[in-house]
Image 1 (cartoon, helix red, strand yellow):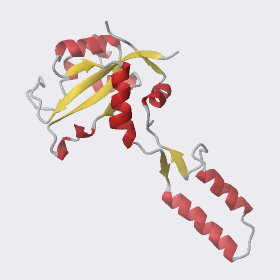
Image 2 (cartoon, helix red, strand yellow; image 1 turned 135 degrees about the vertical axis):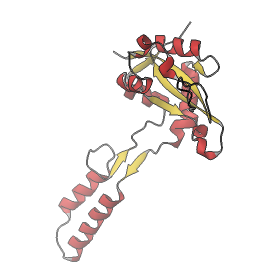
Image 3 (tube, rainbow, N blue to C red; image 1 turned 30 degrees about the vertical axis):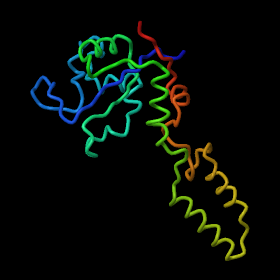
Image 4 (cartoon, rainbow, N blue to C red; image 1 turned 90 degrees about the vertical axis):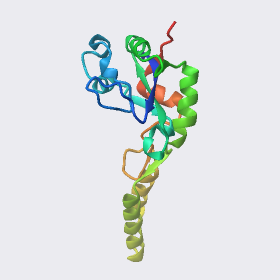
Length: 183
């Protein structure tokens, strides 16, 4: 059964003077939310424990590029989202699923590779095949290995599907979630 979670967008800034210890950060201090809405854990550990973590961000989030702000999105339980929006109204907002899909598909998923290649493995297979051919040996076994390596759905090293889904629909399926709508 899919988990019911809320997409929470969090604004990040170059300097953010909201930490309880007086230091600056790029995030609002989500650890300041009531412990009961974050399972008594630090927010980063909590997000990982519920299987969400930060699922997407726009490209300006790397503040080293000169941008002065960015945004991140995480899927969180309703109580966490409500507390974050209540405590940080100018920096946290709940997205609709359509808004999340647009952000994910256009600003995040579009930059993820479809396939990831292990160049060293593919070169090694190619070199082995060339050696077999040079010695007039049969290549059936290595050809089968090459075919497996070139199949992104085969677990053998070579070519694999990218680890991050390119579309929100695919990511949603991998996470096994449904988007909750706040009133």
